[in-house]
Length: 278
Image 1: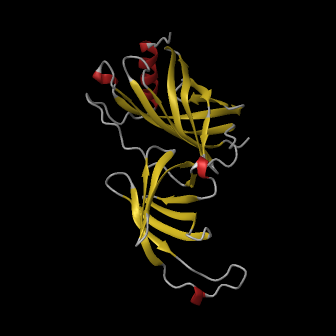
Image 2: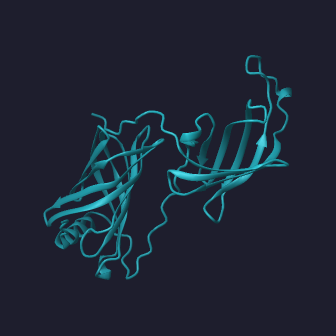
Image 3: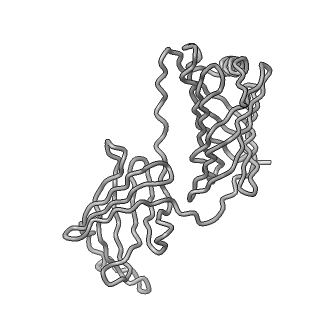
């Protein structure tokens, strides 16, 4: 049975209050909008290996390159420029392009303006799955459920230093509902499909999040993580889920959610850290 320590929660909160500015306290907390998920990756259907679509995202625009086949079963080139709409989908125009044979010097005359070919939409289900729909002018409409394609195992192990921002919500006492921020040193141990995140927060609390990793393309998740913390005021032993964990050129980033951290509170947080040079 998981034991939650309300004293730990109160101490954890006070530790951060001493060192960092708590952005807001109010009775009914509204969580801040988190940054849009980065959908940049190679996407495909595992059972239909041989075709796919590359998504490259800049802010709220996603550029798509399709590697698909025409009626003659030969490679066909399409691209799409899509933008985030009010429904959270990326929708835009589909284009066909032509150009110089790759084995010859590039000739701009071989590359006229792209021809409008139809429309394309990517509707995310979550950070790892979505529906790709594209319609060709005078042709078929194709709708596919796609996922990120994993090429190789990405090693998360390392030592990092960074910051975390989060929120406590749904607390039994409205005074517990708050936003917070904290800095930390982080050690990540990664091996045999499991990971351990050890956070040493500058506010004085030490926490570990550990569990089985799931990789989807560039991203990892830990759907069922153990979440344990220790501070001068007590300890916490509960569960959490980590999502959108990504190794970057500069370090590591991710999010986690813990539905019960004491005092009836829920914790949602995002973190980002740079490589700690020895």
